[in-house]
Image: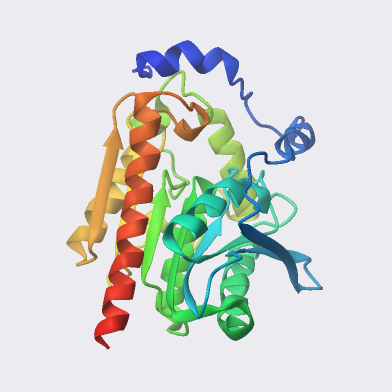
Amino acid sequence: MASVELDPAIAEMVASVPIPTISADNLAALRASFATPVVGLSDAVERTDHVIDTDTGVIVRVHRPRDLVGPAPCFYSIHGGGYVLGDRGMDDLKLDRWCQAFGIVGVSVEYRRAPETPYPGPLDDCYGGLQWVVDHHDELGVDPACIGIGGVSAGGGLAAALGLLARDRGEIALRFQLLDCPMIDDRQTTSSSRLDGLVIWSRESNTFGWQAYLGELYGTDDIPYLAAPARCEDLSGLAPTYVCVGGSDGFRDEDIEFALRLGQAGVATELHVYPGAPHGVAMFAGTDVTARYTGDATAWVGRQFDAIRAASQRE
């Protein structure tokens, strides 16, 4: 079986970013290690937390530049973590920068995690958070007609599913979706998903993540496409989409195929694949491939907001 070929600069850094295979035995400890306070945030952005559902305890964090005036576009962000890890704080630094750079409101949703809450709970939470933003757009200073969504890894998978769910329900119109190394295929039949030596997110971790998220559905033929978007046969009618993934990421092949099928379905799609980049490449700051990976995605998001504003001025 083929092994992973990493970018040389990242290969030197791998030992400094040890991520063990995730299992039920170490999940609690890994969750605790992810709960590290974010440093380097600006005072120019105000962050407020809102409990949107007292029954589930789901929280959204709203990021708004203190000097922002008038209704603004919104980026709705879904954190990663293999469906079993992570929290809303993982998006703090990204939204701190993007809110200032693009003059937008950022919202990050903290959905319930598997295995305690399997599908469809986390997706329901994400949709509920998005609906809450639309319902409270006046007090948040958000233009409800100018919302883009996105996420990384499992967050990218949930963003892909959220885009499909919003399309199917027809209640909320999205302007774009950013799918950063999305986790979208539970079957693990592609060549990249079976590589030896995957960095950050191994085959075994991927199996655990999907088992936790799908629960009793795992391994059956009854997996709905809203649980694993790669299974969706009709990808038409979705918002413009950006898909990025590393060439040494186990999700490479499923993400490339998904992007190709989006384009074939008539969705305006941009695909970027970065040779030598592993899953979670943003963790390897200071490398050229990481700078290109994050810089290209940021530039694309900026172009979407520019286009939104230009269209609003013409109306």
